[in-house]
Length: 173
Image 1 (cartoon, rainbow, N blue to C red):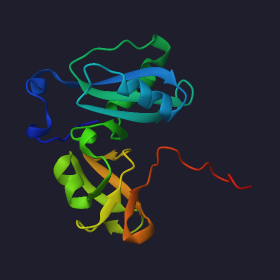
Image 2 (cartoon, rainbow, N blue to C red):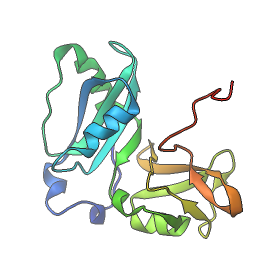
Image 3 (tube, helix red, strand yellow):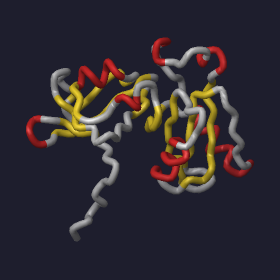
């Protein structure tokens, strides 16, 4: 994974020491991996989750950080896949803590390292459109940039495609 971030996004002194590291602790769900990431101190500059198939299906993590982390030898291949992966789901990223409440697309782009906001199946979102973040924003790391995928909501607004508490598929069946 190659991180493309503005120098102003990085905390002082981080640019020289930070590197991409892969970690695999065998997390079975995205929520477990998210919780582990949120507990890290100091916080990484960028943290992404990756669904990996080896040695069993689970969630591995890539971090842009000066810190080091241990991974059990049997999970090393998963950690390496996460570190080298061209895509991921960003949990922490520069500006992520400033994406709270209802914000325009333009405000999201100005406050964070998200490069684009897209409407699922429709292309780029209008900069003036309001996004109801519900204080939970998980952009996709694609081709070196963060892309927030959204879906239409009531009142001409947008919501992030990934929700904190999604309705399970076929929940009403």
